[in-house]
Length: 119
Image (cartoon, rainbow, N blue to C red; front, side, top):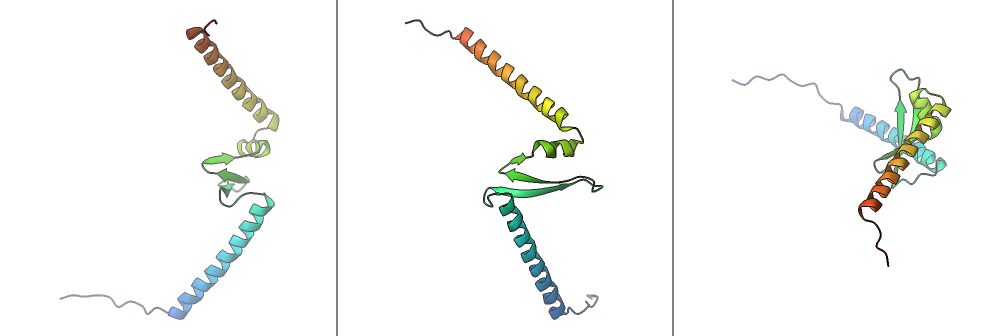
């Protein structure tokens, strides 16, 4: 013998009202996002606005996501890591200088292995 509990009746009008309310809210948010994207001069087709907020709410950043690359300004990186801009700038400069030295060593090694032919 099958037994089942009777379900509460669903108020279709109330559900539709909630759906309508959510759709209006979604439309409002989309308009706000479009305005923000226009203000930031971001292309909707290739970029997305990403909002980062720390758990305690002390840090919030609006950053640009372009394909799979996240773009932050020096100020945003400084805020995100809680460091002075000069420290972040110095660190980035060191990273680029190290990469440049590695590239120069690679080019030098390649030229030693395959020296140019004399005419």
